[in-house]
Amino acid sequence: MVQAARDLSIHVNLLRTRMRTATSDAAAAATGRQGANSEQAELTRLRKEVTTLRMDRDIKSRGLLY
Image (cartoon, rainbow, N blue to C red; front, side, top):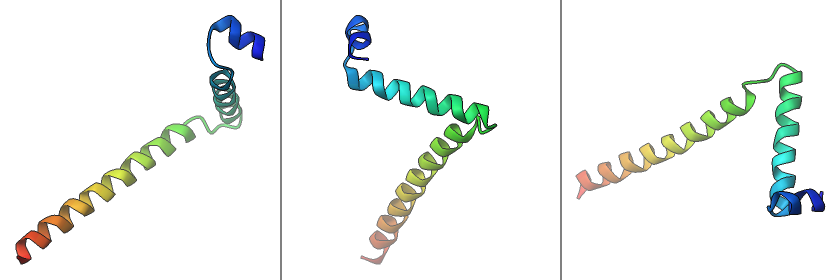
């Protein structure tokens, strides 16, 4: 793996990460869970958005109190 990373002119850890991602994507596709990664990414994005909106709401409501 080290030699392959050198041949590609990338760090070995980057190659390991990419291989791990490709392997998990292939396993998900084989088991029929193709959309699992995109669904997880969307859930993460939506949770962050909810957190931001709640903070905005709280800041605005506190501003009305003073």
